[in-house]
Every structure is written in structure tokens, then in C-alpha cells.
Image 1 (spheres, helix red, strand yellow):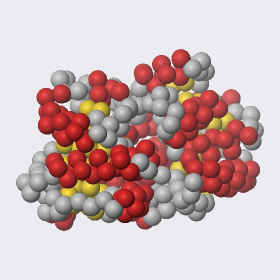
Image 2 (tube, one colour):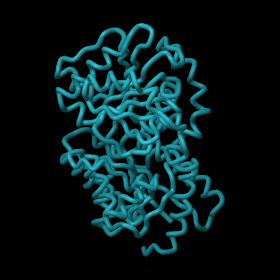
Image 3 (cartoon, one colour):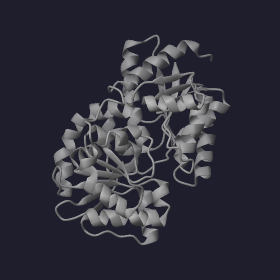
Image 4 (cartoon, helix red, strand yellow):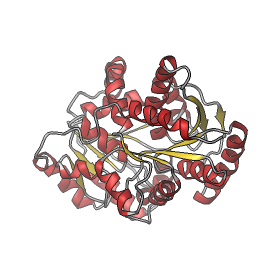
Length: 371
């Protein structure tokens, strides 16, 4: 059985790490039913700090195809991806096209496969923010509706699909990012001392922040409020560590936004370095879906700089507070974050074996594939 896996953004590289390694392990055991994986990197994240370092430290096989798309408007970027992915799919003739999450790479991979009548498997299916202004929401909804196998991380995501009339091919497998956290946390210990010492910080003595979503970066008022809030909560005894996404840098410069010295703006970090920073933070402020979950798994209080979240379980448990981009709500959320949580994190995202479940389902589906 052959699958073509489409990745492009750094969260997809992390998710692919769990599945690709599991595919390799299964190949050693299931010779006659082995999955052959062809990895396609669209180049959506093309900076070494945003991409290449992830392959190196997570032991992911180098992509078989690197499309080199780069940045651009949604239409331009998705169109270029669609054209080049179609060429790869025609050449490889896979049984399944595997896509992850909700980026333009996800949408382009799914649409290219659908038009070539190649079956589609969607990892992290069924997530909904119910905000159609988000490009990610459009990407995930369209992808779900053309997919043949839908691998859901939570019961909520299964229910979301059911409400949209999607039930065939739906599987509740858990979250592949939990697989990664459980596997790579031990490896992150190897860079822990260097990471903390390099930033002159100590466990529990800093806030960690990430800001990258278009709804925040492209809106001068929202980004200004977020930056002002980070500046106000930061102090000498508890600075804010802010690995800044290239998109955010561009818009911050355009809006003339600056920080005090207590906000330590750094380059994007590797996955293992991010695990270190997340696990030892006093509190995390983010608009990233993945970081919300990782904060939850590390039992670190989280402030989400969005008006809604797909990961409702983190909010319901009290470990995550939605503040949007309002400066006063963010500051108030930081003050009250420790009072908000009321239960210990539970395994609502599976048991860390999602990749294994996905491989088994794919192997079971192999006999149904018509080449």
C-alpha cells in the first residue's frame, strides 16, 4: 500500500513525525501489508528555523519531494500547491493521500487528490471553531467533506462531523501530538539546560508567548493590544519569552510596535526547545492550537489570544482561558489563571497511541483500495 503524505507547516511536521516513525515500525512487522510512505513538503514554512530543524531533531525521513512554494496570498499559495501536488500524485499513483490539520497545504493536498479520484485520509479531522472568517476553518471543513478516512482526536470532533452528516470513515483515534509529547519529552531533556541558560531563565520564572494567526497579526488593533498586554505583564522577575513568527515580525514592524526589555523576543525555536520552554513556563499565552494542548498536557495554565478555540476540552477543564485580543482581558486572565482550573488534566486526547491506531486502520483499508 502506498500513501503520499502532504506536509508544509511546522505543526504538520511534528504530527508527521509520530506517524512516519510508526509506519517504519509497522513495515518491519508487516512485510506483505506494509505501508510505503512518500513524503511531500510543500515549502509553506521554508525557513530553516520553521522547518528543516524539525526534520533533523525528530528523525523524520527527508521529504521525497520538496515543492518550494513559499509564501504568498491564500489563493496564490494554494493554487501553486494544487498544481505541483497534482503532478506528484499522478506520478506516484498512491492508494491514499494523507493530509494533516488545517493549512493551505492540507486543502491543496485534499483538493488535488479529490480531483484525481485518489482516496484521502485526514489526520485531525472534525475540529471546528465555527468562525468562517478563519482561513483554517475553511480549509478543515472542505477537507473533511472530501475525505474518505477521517481520523478524529476527540469525541467532540466526531460529534462535529456527525452534525454535518459525515459518519462514514470516521475514526476516533486520539491526538497524534500527544504521541509526540510522550515520546520527545525525554529527548528534550538533552537540550533543557542549554535552552534555559541561553535565555537566562529558570523553571517557573517566565511567561511564554506565541502569536502567529492572521486574525491577530493582520489586524493592527488586535496585535497592538496583545503586544501592550505582554509588555504590561512582563517584569524583571518574570519576563515574557516570545519566539516570534516571521509573519508577526513583518506586521509588528509595519505597525511600529516595540517591546520593553522584559519581553525577550527571540527567533522561532526547534520543537525540542519549545517543549522545554512550555513545560517550565509559569504560564503560556498563545493563539496556537497545538500550544494550547501542550500547555494542558504539561499542566501549565494557558491564556488563548483568540475569541474561540477548537480545543474546547482545555477550556472546560479550566486550564485554558479565552481572552481574545483585548488588553484588559488578557491581563485579567493572567491574574486569575491559577484560580480558573478546577480539575487535573485528563486523557481526553487519547492514550498516546493515535499513530498506531491510524496505521492499523490504513492497513485494514488497503484491501478496499482499487488501483
